[in-house]
Image 1: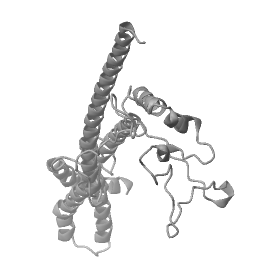
Image 2: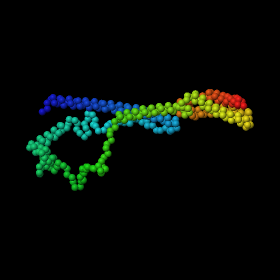
Image 3: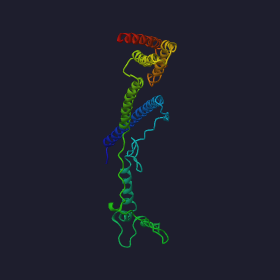
Image 4: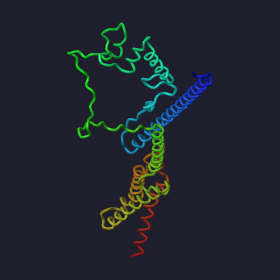
Length: 313
């Protein structure tokens, strides 16, 4: 017979299991909260990255794509385990199995005065004897197993299927750890941020002379346009020497026409190829500097051409 000390030890064991189950449930709940918070943070971060990529795409002429803005996906619990502190599915609570088996043994072994039921339940029935519930007095016609009628269909037992027959089920996929997947998503988000920053740095550089500073680029563009105007001016001077262009037309083009054309050409070039793909506001085109360069370079080039022509003569 069990003593009080054994019952006390059993009670302490049950209390320790209950506390361990409660601690496990609390840790699981905390882990789920952390996973949900991390998933929400990554969802907002990826949404912001998608919007930024749409802005970059619009800057280079690509239409914006649809970015999901809904809540973070729910994280499902890992399958294959029962909740902490609860009973397993389809079974009795912990500690009830010994009691139930003991009760069944007592009912089967000690019911009745002559022990006939015990013999029928445990020792088995001999020839002509009815085992199970049929052996209980006062219950005629009740068998141990239900009889199948003539019109009923007997359930077929499952049969083994050979691998060659193609009936082997596919292996179950391995369970995915949400924490590992969220860590991979965070790493991919960091990599996307790094590439996004590099893209923004490249987008802030113009296509024309990207390594030059804006003032140096403007000087180079206006000087190149003024040089093109000076070449046209020399062609007109040579044409004036053979009588194709009169002196008044030549002077008008040298003093106003060619400098103006050179200035507007440099202005348009800076606006088309000297503008970064992504820039806040309108980039400076250095209008005064370009006006000075163009309206001074063409007349100076004309004077230098005359001096060189006279020296060579």
